Image (cartoon, rainbow, N blue to C red; front, side, top):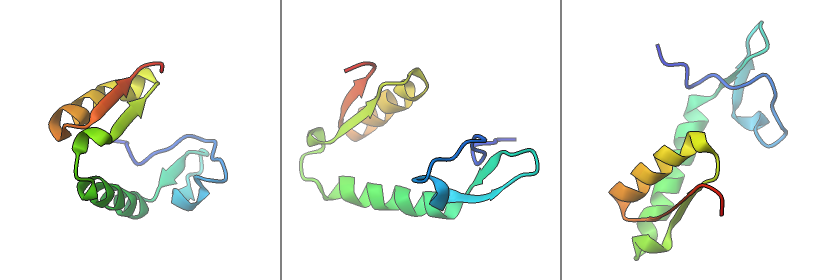
Length: 84
């Protein structure tokens, strides 16, 4: 079973709006509805740009680099994976 909706025990003030609730063990559960809304908004913004190579997809952390490379490959955007 995927557990992508589970966050960490720590939440900063900017992420509080995306937390659905906190489990008894202290792990925060992410509100997937709000996450989906933001994904759709980001997709609309990217589609509105005429030249896809003007969009930069960035991840300096190793856990996100593979996703950045794949996203850039399939959308013809510019990737920056690793330190910059």
